[in-house]
Length: 478
Image (cartoon, rainbow, N blue to C red):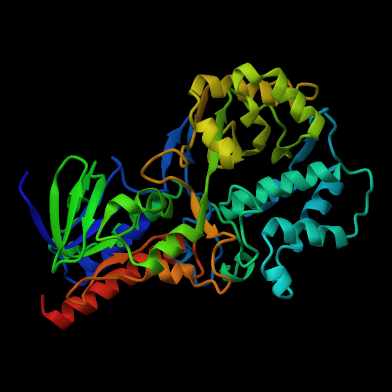
């Protein structure tokens, strides 16, 4: 294959890559291409049709309003949903135990809200700062006044762990450092905002619409090449060279690398030549990324009442052990970590289930038919006494943990991450070649110092690295 030469190569067509591309094009830098391993745009944003509506396989919510570039673009076009009760869908869901007991909603809601209020508070001292979120949570729970002693506290706490992992992006709260509370910054405003229509993939359209150079009729989609999985990056010379799995070769003056932290963790030894400097290796190894997956079930009709926002499942240790032993041959142990099902506002008659960690990755290896049978068994175990549940018309799931183009959902500060919260900045530093040129630039949510794990953070990093290259190009006159 012929060698392709460009001024800039962007690796990855997620929002960080698209944001970088739009900034370059807006500033009259046209000699670039985007290499994307998948056969679609969006990266960890993926909206697909589902029944009579649509679902977001990946990113789902706009986190906050003030200072959030996603909210700004969406609200300008009146694309923000009126549904503002997303977080409350979890808190006010029907909590039901593995023996079929329904917890009164005022008791469950009060406990959950009280539990999560204690995780809004920064670590008080160095002792707490060096704790995991799991340890900090347990310490503060022990001091919390529990109004109703009949609540299944252990089961409720276990549910809180699953929910918080889905929020953090961690496999376990004991892997996540309490510094996440301080290092991750919330945009002021409502914490979880849904899209009015078309789902989160709308942000790609907004980026393309806002920054495409229509006067030149240049389209970023024309610069995309799909199916390009990167296997080697040479970066010590005057120009960077990229080799893909299909043996295609590319060269560029600058590269913006937007692959996920999960990919970096899995391939850094083989991907870079020469090997990465120690500070970069340390950041890659010590930042965390886990698996948060979704399970969608569309039913022929809505079998739950309008006032029910979802169902949260509480396992006792004995029931969990019994269930696993009875279904060992089926490999259904992962079902015990599906911590609930909740309504989908943009998809009629559909429930969304959540699962995290190793159980999620085990689920990903199951066939859709296996999953469908298992989830129906799970729903009936918890709810058959209260509802007649029809067999679903459609079932699908996400697979972020085992997909080699992602290897995880979103990043967090692990217990190995530095306690000053500098790891994201270290990951973001460009690689400098033998000519002292910043030749490989890093973007993506994990490279944002305080908006890591978010779409708005990923977009900001794409703009950041495009601006870095624009400065270089201006100074060198390329």
